[in-house]
Amino acid sequence: MKTTSVPSIGVHWYNFSAVGKVLVPGEPRFAYLPEWLSAGFNLSPIQIPFTETFHRVREKEFDFLPGFLADSIPDQWGQKIMAADLAKYGLKITPLNKLAWVGTRGIGALKFLPPASEDRSSNWESVSPLYLAREAQEVFKKSPPEAFEHLLKAGTAGGAFPKANVALLPDRTLLCGGDVAKDLKAQHPGARLGILKLDSEDTPGRPSTDGRLEYAYLAMARAAGIRTTAAELLSDEEGERVRNHLFVVRFDVSEAGDHRLHLVTLAGLLERFTLTYSNLIDATRRLTNDRREVAEAVRRMIFNARAGNSDDHGKNHSFAFDDRTGEWKLTPAYDLTLNYSEGRLYHGLLHQTFGGTPALNQMRELAGDFLILGDEFDVIDAQVKAAIDRWPAFAADAFLTQAETDRVSEIHRGIAERLQLQTPSRPLKTPRRFR
Image (cartoon, rainbow, N blue to C red; front, side, top):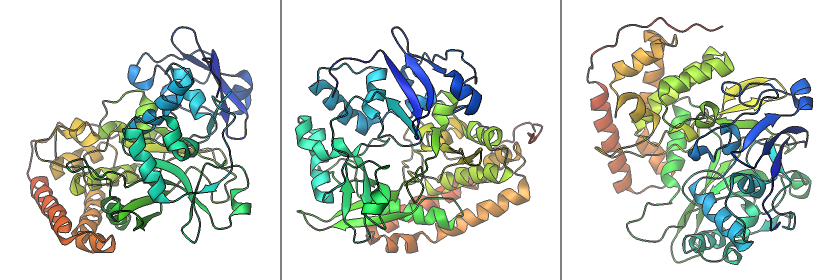
């Protein structure tokens, strides 16, 4: 790894076409390159002008970077790995050093050059999930980077809990550490790229990392008509307890591995974290100009409300741009699980929009602002409700205990009762038109 901080970072497309540059000293500033302006496209069209003008973001939460670049930097879990690795080489944790650390290993279509490290192996190596789980425990113990070398090689994604970028073979062998672009499919036919959410927590009283609940919620969301990516439970009996890791197929890489989608979160797109469902649905309308995508955003709002997913913040909603079609769409839904406790303060879109569990008429009115009117809203809601009523079947397929199944069912019933409460209607707004 380089042992000096970088003065600038080149932002490149996954095929190494130059997109723009981030410069220091002072506050980081980004500008598109002339060649990208003439032949490329805007990677964040709501906030960033598609010109040679420098764009600054004076928000610490975004590392003072444009939101679509800050999205490439790992969240709490990945920050722990990155900080330990940078400290090993005496490097400060700066925005540009973070981008250089991501280098060519990030999620989405962007690469950052020069990378901080060119000496790591890019070969795919087999590794057991138990080994990765134990390495994750070493990260939390603040052990030196040598204690979690496989996680360093694998790279990581957003979120607070342990995870690794991996490939899963048809025989359920896991590979990590390789380059997506380097003949994975030729060397390993049938390999699927994904994110492995590690079941690594063994401390009583700490939040569970068992993947079964999220697996059941993903199945329930699919039954509710929501686009989700494929997922698989990997139960590992190798250690002192059965660990239930969750493998989620990556949706930013084509099945052949030769094409990438550009991703930007809602928070990154709007460059703020205090967000509402009105922001999500409006951004969906403006980016996609597709009424079907707007209806999908409404469906996700209803599902999160009925299912008790209160961790629906702006980093857990994303958009994908496909340069082959020139179209933006909502990405498949992700990080769908039960995050609900009566009286607890959350920072997700539900709580920022409604102050807690909304009444059904509040969501109906909000959807109506975007031309998803009464009858259509009621059809979507009925489809979501029918899926949630089947919760015990999804829980059984995920091998959840009866006690856990009953606990979640009770929460669903309480939410359903609160949804039926009537709240005062807002003054009617003029519905927003599609251009």
